Image (cartoon, rainbow, N blue to C red; front, side, top):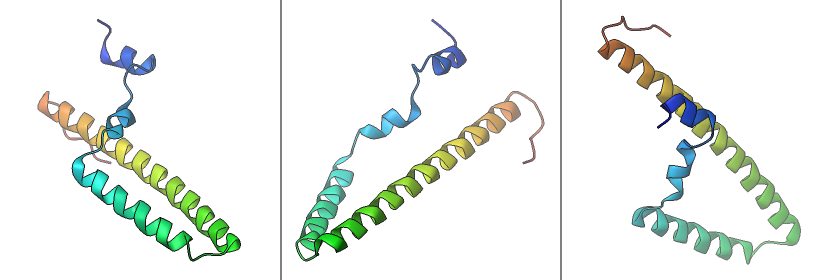
Amino acid sequence: MKNILEELWYGNICPDSYFGQTSAEEKELLGYIVRHTDALCATLTDAQKEILEKRDDCQAELSGITQRDIFVYAFRLGARMAMEMMGGDSIER
């Protein structure tokens, strides 16, 4: 078996793929979002729908940036914890 860094390098480890699994709570919330979005869109003009779509695109981009930043922070935190557990000094930011 390859080591974890090699697995990561070859794309065999994909941390964001785990989040494709939705819980019952998430499915319920997604259902609410779809229902409310459909109700809202039924009242909008085509121009307003386009504005809403652009807003949703910006929100999705922001969400991706936020998820990336959280991943990087958590990865670094985990590495610092591992180093400390191995007897190394705590690393300052």
